[in-house]
Image (cartoon, rainbow, N blue to C red; front, side, top):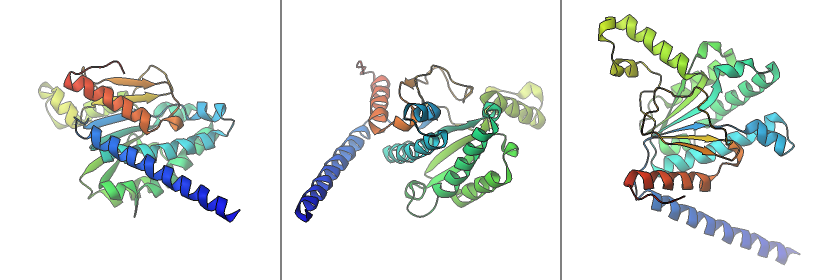
Amino acid sequence: MADILTVVHLFYRAISSILLYINDFILETFQQGPIPRHVAFIMDGNRRYAKENEVTVAEGHSAGASTLKQNLNQCFTLGIEVISLYAFSLENFKRPKEQVDTLMRLLESSLLQIHGPNTFVEKHDVQIRVVGKLELLDENVMSAVARAMDATKDNKSKVLNICIAYTARDEIATAIRETVSGCDSSNITESSLTDNMFMEVPVDLMIRTSGVYRLSDFMLWQCHQHTPIEVVDRNWPDFGRWDMGVILLRWQRRRTGMWIGL
């Protein structure tokens, strides 16, 4: 019996090593081409995943959090400089209180765990920025937000924008108010408005999971005529490195003019 277990263990170690080699090879291949500077994710489908897999909604969101960590590590390894996440919309406050409380607890625990030794944040020197109407968050979540941002404020290599209590319309309205209060209205320009947005960097690639074709009021100012929007017919917890790889390859082909039908 012990010999069989040893063989099985060695087999799995060999498979893991092969998969790791393939993954590293693919990452190195992608890095030979252009890489989007700013990628935005609408992480949809956690509740649908829970229903389809007959688990609780909380377990569905927890699975989504695990998927997020894997994808963030891969994206930053590829060289993507800025990643923006739609974590919690202003509209989400209209959900049943139990669901809102579950999401808030998950946000709090994720923010407390996301930075520190041996995390992708430390590995990639990531600065965490949490944006939105943060005054709507409860005290515990606000404390976790403050700790995450303070702990990473000196990191310069990469940026992770986490949009909480956010909609693009609110962001634009806030930027207009701040711009008007700071200058003569006749001097308001596209550039001056951009300077007062929560996120100034234009989006190079927008990805939405769950197969739903809508932007859900996310980063409407930062998207532009050259921003491809990839809608993936897969729930967020099921979104893996291969899905990201196909999307990135398609983006590179468009960027270099070597389009193929992927």
